[in-house]
Length: 439
Ligand code: ATP
Ligand code: MG
Image (cartoon, rainbow, N blue to C red; front, side, top):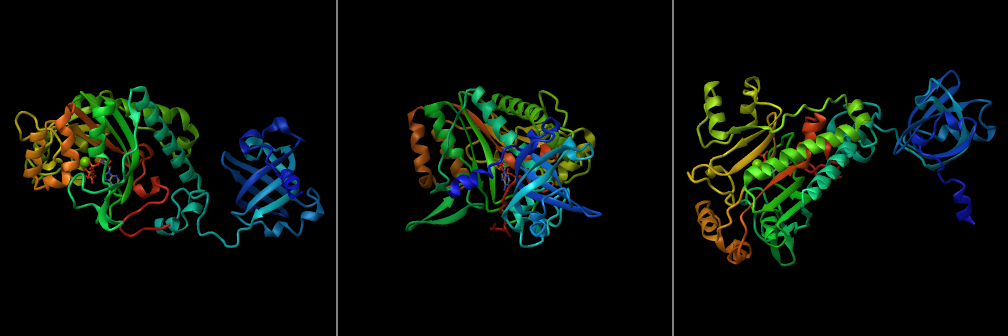
């Protein structure tokens, strides 16, 4: 009984499918109310569904008297199904409006939301994050997350076309992959374990069996500082390729960035327009700057920086006017400041490594890896790591580990560069940082 009754409320059209060709026809639309405006006894509701919005007009004598007592119950954010007639209205968005014949409030909104749907920047980020699911109804975030969806899809598509297979490695691990400082310890039955900082060691091992692998998954970093580019839980796009060295994976990375940019340009036109974003023009190939040369450039502009120091975001800002901008690589870093698995060049002091940058934001780090066991053990000892704790990893190197190279690309950082977003929290649904563990 109830079933057939409910069926009468099944949506017949999404907002995007209603146009003037339906003039005079009856439709059922379903969604939530994003705005209510009143002009001299006429109420205008905007009903949103996942594809857009539609104007609903409530004018006395046009709708049945039976609706009169129900109308005051409709508040912004309420979920509602409306059966009504389509009417051409050149002044309305999409050129049509709906005159209700009947409606069913599916879920009342009991409170006034502090979040203004149409606002671009919105109110303070903490208030927004406290009610994130409502915040995500804003066209500003809807646009960003549609782009995020395209970016994820196009990275997958690109890597599959390049002959990589997608893998999923453990997120609960026994040993740090890159040194212990930023690990989250957890209880694992009667033992201590950790949340993984990166799939590094597993993806390297998998090159033995599958040659070319990629993973898109969470990485966990206990980042004690509050910055606009660090999350405690981020998404990493990782690749590892057998029989390759760093120049080859840099080429894969820059081709992937081009592919992603073109896909976003093609698939997210309306979102880019809403966000007022002009996608960055990208050269091909990306500029490559040797670490040593950058240090010299920094010293020339008066920075007190020594060979062997890390290059901070702040310092890179000072090279913007010297043409170091847009997407570019910094290559051949000092071995001493890169992780133990990065392969040194023949000089020993420099290594076959790169960071992909956008302006002064690091997007990715990659390198040729050490595939010789004794060399790896040597490097680990130098970095003060406990060799025994890495036995699970080192033991496979006795069975023909192929030479290999790869990178980890931060999805959120990439989105910040594409969407011109300053705060990384706005490109994740439910961000985690030192102050925030919910929602
Ligand atoms: P940074 O110097 O910016 O803190 P990192 O060098 O410590 O980054 P890597 O270990 O090289 O980071 O990780 C590879 C990529 O993963 C980074 O280039 C970045 O895009 C992303 N990433 C790393 N840590 C975070 C984080 N806490 N939040 C968001 N993205 C991150
Ligand atoms: Mg890095």
